[in-house]
Amino acid sequence: MVDARSGSPRPEPVMEPAADLAEAGLRLEVDGAVATVVLDRPERRNAMTFATWRGLARIGRSLPPQVRVVVLRGEGPSFSAGIDLSMFSGGSGESLPDGSDFAASDAFIAELQEGYTWLRDPRFVTVAAIHGHVIGGGFQLALACDIRVAADDVKLCMKEPALGLVPDLTGTKPLVEIVGVNRALELCLTARTVLAEEARRLGLAEIVVPREGLDDAVRELVGSLLAVNPGAAVATKRLLLEATENTLAEQCAAERREQIGRLREMAEARRQG
Ligand code: ACO
Image (cartoon, rainbow, N blue to C red; front, side, top):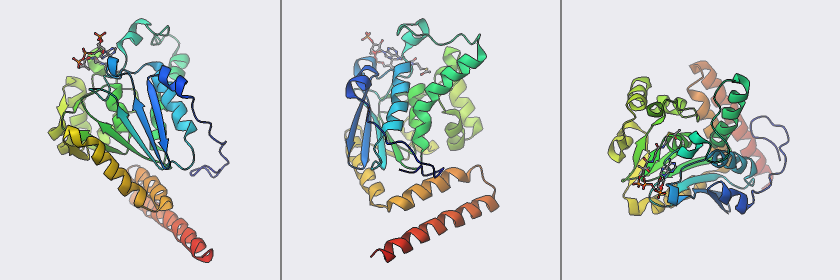
């Protein structure tokens, strides 16, 4: 298998054991081209531990090559109440670093961020199905996905600054890209709750549906995403993700490069009949 970006060989993925994921508060269901990652600690409102974030990173590394769409959803009344507050007091036997060792703290946070960064991989389209409370690290997880489908009971809140922290789970970049720096500041520094209608208006949710229609809406979206040519889907996501960083000239060149790749692949498919 070859990495879509670097072209170098990628090791065969090994699926994560369900028991290890369960311990991290996660469940993974793979059905053909669709992987569903479930935040599965409903009794704690899917609060996330360090183990959860490491588990998400392992899922990203272990998905089989046929997976094209990844859906993230939460079990129970909420998508996620964010970081498990016991992490502040070493409840899991492991505490947040105190920052005294910069390099070690940096590496610690970088490892947790890996639970989020893989969701940008152009091999997959990632969909967050969000409902109920979507707080802090949970909000950032939704922001790491390509498309957010929200139930009308959704309550989004970037709570980190209210707890003395910054959002550090990859959420600040997509938040600013979606709502702009001024609105992002207002949302983060007031830690106020954004409800469904405002989320739709701000672009924090692409689709808003009644709570009871969330699963159907996600199923319909996934069906549409899978109907697109797989190679075109990967190339288009790669192209779109570059767009905000590139100059117009660079983006035009990227479009030409991707299109030539598509034309070659289509010609090869025709040759093979
Ligand atoms: N960490 C640990 N346990 C949690 C968390 C959390 N983040 N959120 C909820 N729980 C637990 C509650 O303590 C409660 O446990 P109990 O049944 O043993 O009492 C259980 O989950 C249910 O929670 P309730 O508060 O009873 O549920 P409710 O639906 O009324 O409220 C809500 C949900 C709004 C999410 C509330 O629990 C809450 O405010 N939680 C804290 C949110 C928070 O501050 N997260 C940190 C964000 S910052 C970041 O993520 C980096």
